[in-house]
Image 1: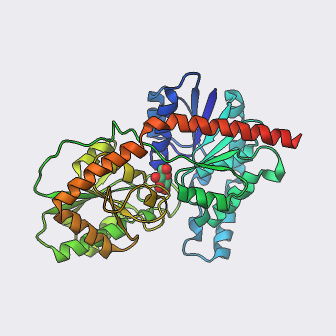
Image 2: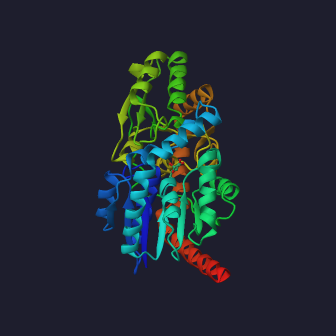
Image 3: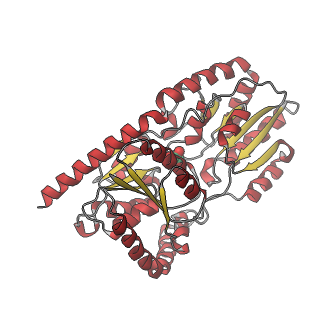
Length: 410
Ligand code: GLC
């Protein structure tokens, strides 16, 4: 069985880490051949090749890469649609050429199943019109909160002009995302596969004692990841407890190209300076060996201001035996039990976040108990060991759905 995976970008964010875990899991299975097509250059290519996966880089047109629904932020709907239409029109010639190339590559590869891992490649699969091959859309986001994208995907998932080449099945990364996908894409059957991680790589280190405790936020620089909330919480802590032996870290970077969707490092540094905490917070940038970073931190903070579809960093840190403070909304709420294996806080509230950090800093024993429980939860619920079986089951369902659809259309 040949599976062709599609990913819009070559850089490694959460969805790409999940992709690599899936490739690793499927690679161990007999009679499975894996191929990956990516839309931009980046470390994902090398990492997938290291696993023995064949990779093709089919560079997406620059204008298409920058396309997103950010025009809707801060503009009225009419203006936003107008801006977006202009951008789409600008992409048309290059995207037409790209689609022909994309279709040719897919035909040559002769996949038994196509597994698309991002919105832009979902769109491409529907536009090229591949018949009689199951198309699985892996859904990593809440499409319902992005009305334009939801509309486009809904239209495409039903099949352009009701022809047969629509998406066959959707994989949602949490129940919350599944619920949202069922509302926005009512014609697409949705199944949930919780993200998984390699719990051998993400594993705890022996207890080490250090005087200055380290609290860190690990996330890409997407604006909704709540770096601003974290910085404000730090300000609050530093003002109320000026002599506390603690240092703060921001780990990650602005890795995507979509317009207006991310903080720049300078912007965050300016905010830290405005709050007066420049000497209390360090920016460590994107880190290759992220498990090492989790192990090095004492408390991990997740501060997303919008409902988090899943929150890979949460389970990664839990698997490393770290107490995580989780912004409690969306799929993230399904990953932990408050005060048992992590601590929940309301999203977007720096004072509540500061209080939760202070509480954990103060209570060594609570940190230790949560650490042990966190590791247990991560290995029981989010281990890579169950992944290949779940994915293969979904592929079987996708094949069945496609056969049913074909016989109905006869
Ligand atoms: C997306 C989601 C994030 C999830 C990741 C991996 O980046 O926003 O919540 O953890 O995909 O599925």
